[in-house]
Image 1: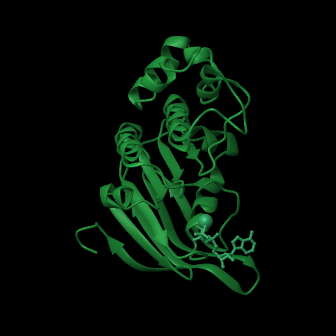
Image 2: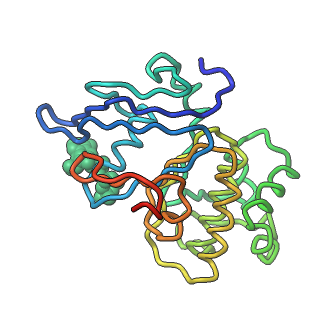
Length: 230
Ligand code: ATP
Ligand code: MG
């Protein structure tokens, strides 16, 4: 198993193909220091999700390896990997139940106080308190009373509670108003604090705030650097 990890991540000369003979990733090397945030950008089909798939071990590379703190992730159990690598997906998963339960899904043994603490940290507390029953407000999977932005903040609170060292964020493409956008940026800062993060970024603000930007094209890194450098 992975011991308490720092969160260094190395994609070491990765080649990957979903179908034999068609490389989705070609000699990809990305070296990430613990605590850094990486924005993955590129056209559709460039390989962003594939990089994430390998980090989650949904697939294994054909060549090369993915290492966390120098340990090949093929050498650790899936359970220990999952406990250290958290994902916030684009279509934020909300299930039928209370707001509290939806946040607590991040860590099932969290106390009510910890749920509130996580919500506060990502600036979700105020909107939750403005709902008819606060944290006990029932939400539905679909036709929810929550806006896209609010759903996103809930998913951040959930991820914060889970407290993984490495966080993957597939940013929603849905357009949201400027005020919510600012709130989400603030929340994101709290969430990313002290974690290694990989963001499939769509918003310019997210890309600008990343420590490193990796630009992919047809499975190859065509540019890499900070926003100022690129
Ligand atoms: P998008 O912005 O559309 O999400 P992406 O950068 O995430 O694109 P990937 O999903 O990583 O792109 O796809 C990289 C390449 O691998 C593409 O050519 C895609 O068609 C192919 N691919 C992705 N998933 C599969 C799969 N499950 N089986 C076969 N080929 C796949
Ligand atoms: Mg994708």
